[in-house]
Length: 228
Length: 310
Image (cartoon, rainbow over the protein chains, first blue to last red):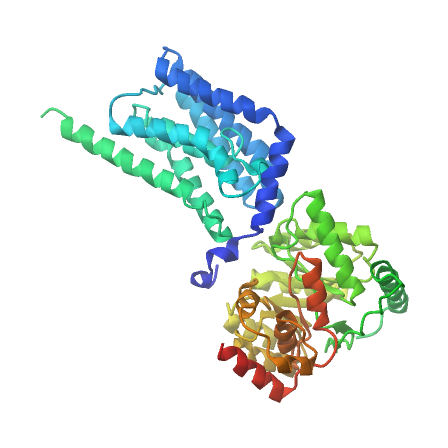
């Protein structure tokens, strides 16, 4: 792309803020009352984290895989692609993430989400609950219609942020790889909302940045506490 | 350029459609017919087109939202009723082409529009197919103008477009750029290819093209379409913070949109400007710039001086 340095973020924005939020309004209307189902699944994930049964990792991975697959198909392919030709690529990325959860968490059972006493795991749970409970309230808080609400398992941003929060609870190295696509989405979404002038543009990027800092902190603490 | 045997019939159909659309949007009781619009000839053919067209970047990319699509159709209806003809789009603009096609079908104005679209793919082999896909979105028999968007793979697409023109599949060929990008390569293509149109960014605060590209266009007999006349609303939003000068009435400007647009289209090298909007009131304001008096050179200098001191 010749003269790439001359492009501003707004040059890559293909739609107006009105069109973008209207997309969520129509999407939410079309899938209602599925939002209640995904919120209930999110609540179920929270309960599984607290109770920690032996099959917890597989169950949570399955919920996350289903959420990412649904967003890939119902949001990116069925709706977002109509106004953003890059959405098919986003759908592919979300589908890959779902497959990673299926492989790592469901088939190989390599994910266990433990709520320990460390700052990292407690922050992770806080980020997950923020995505589940607070994210849907952002639209009405900012003066937008309730039908613009973004819900875990339905909209990409709360699904991604919830996933990052849960991955902070997981206790193995596979989690770092599972964070790549969510972190990339935080940057993409933040850039899109920033170009639109949306006041909530910072939320996903800040959540992603916080997760990166916490992962680095966790790695540092583990290395420091290693015997010898 | 020889006249197409169907040209007289197309003009008649356009006049009928314009009269029909104008009657619907300007009911007989209490409304005068719109003022005649100012036109400029396309140098390569002499065909006259109105100096104000309609862009579709962002504004018409509304997806499948039925309410928004009808709103865009209403903008188009008012545009045509005010004498507009040129509508510009691109495959890059998401669903804009499809929305334009929806509007044309709903209004029955496919024969009235001067359709300007673009080929936008880095793969030369895909150009023809993309043009055909775009034509199906618009649901027009053929495009009036097909342009290579931002000079992407122009070496492959231009020969293809000239072939299509020779075969009668399109009527005019052009290239586009925006915000001053690739002007060196742009000029080179203008000098070496038999283009009918170029599309560049030009407005009262971005007059870079006055130095070389506009004079070259006049020299080579190439029509000029000015994009981003309002710098994606940044320019007009900024201007509206200040009072419109009283002497704007001397050139029949009632608002900043008309002031900014008349500056652009008063340059003798410019054929048409294509402001984009999703609002009926704005399209009516914009089309007001296609009527009345245009500034002369002295007035253009006065307009520049006024804006620069704001």
